[in-house]
Length: 85
Image 1: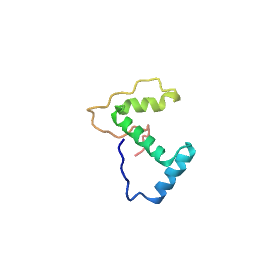
Image 2 (image 1 turned 30 degrees about the vertical axis):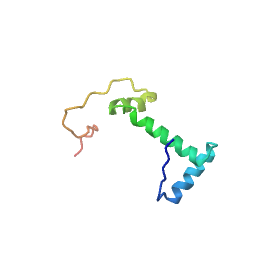
Image 3 (image 1 turned 45 degrees about the horizontal axis):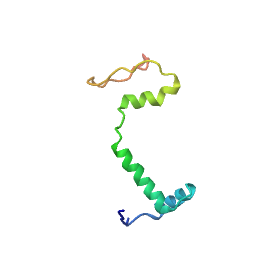
Image 4 (image 1 turned 90 degrees about the horizontal axis):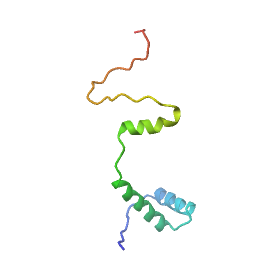
């Protein structure tokens, strides 16, 4: 098994890691191993595209219409329905 040393870790980060480990009922060393394992897993996971993330975020709000594809369109000002200058 590999080992490495982390130098220059801020005291507040160390304290938060210790607190997090206590909440999870494990040693600080095991907590750091778990964090590193999860970070390495996420590296290989494809990141959903922006449209998919927007739909997922608003799925519970009743969004039922498809969002128009904006790729290749020039940016334009939002039409807020105000006819005032």
